[in-house]
Length: 306
Image (cartoon, rainbow, N blue to C red; front, top):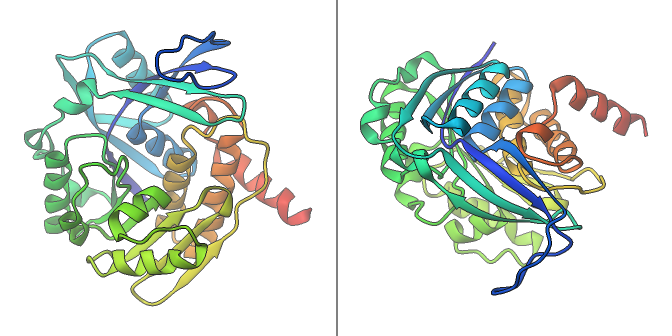
């Protein structure tokens, strides 16, 4: 079984359902508030684990109730928490509102995620893993240290430059596969994606920075893949009723990495990841909405039969 090390963020998501998002200065009535384990690192780790990959998590958690709860729940998802350190800060939190259309608005408080440092990653044995998975919710200096260590170890790196603010183009030469959404692709390529035809141009520009493969997720329009061999694949989205878009992108990433590392072809891995993310938007919450492999395969079978 493939082994993945996810180095990244872990949060407690405090999610409130609203009819619509408030405007500045306005107080509105929330309909329901729930607590979910989240953070891009945790979400992607769970997605990879539930799709059949052996996952180890590395990052920082506060020594508080939220931190203890996250540690317990990720461990219950068969994620090795050996690389997760306790920090003298509150655990990271995300304050999320979800409207009646399933669209979310998020305020992120980094907490212990911001204290996971360059020094903390020096003890990681990156050569023990088939791949490293990174996001951009921990300090960029820490991510850069991981990228350099992975280069020395010869370990494949998958990265998601989200949030894109603060991500540096110079780091792309250390990354094998970059998985990003339309907004992030525009920021890193300089290409305005107001036309799907321009997606290939954005992908090619990112490849020029040293990345081996690029996946641009396009929401309801599916995704676009391009790599240095010239292979290009457009994968359509599945049509589902949207309940909550939280963690859809993270599910896609974790699911793709898992299937790709188990030896499945790029096209199958993209289709599987697309199906997994479709199931995620069909349910509320972050971690709680990420499907198990059996559910994804059942969904794909039904779609083919239909």
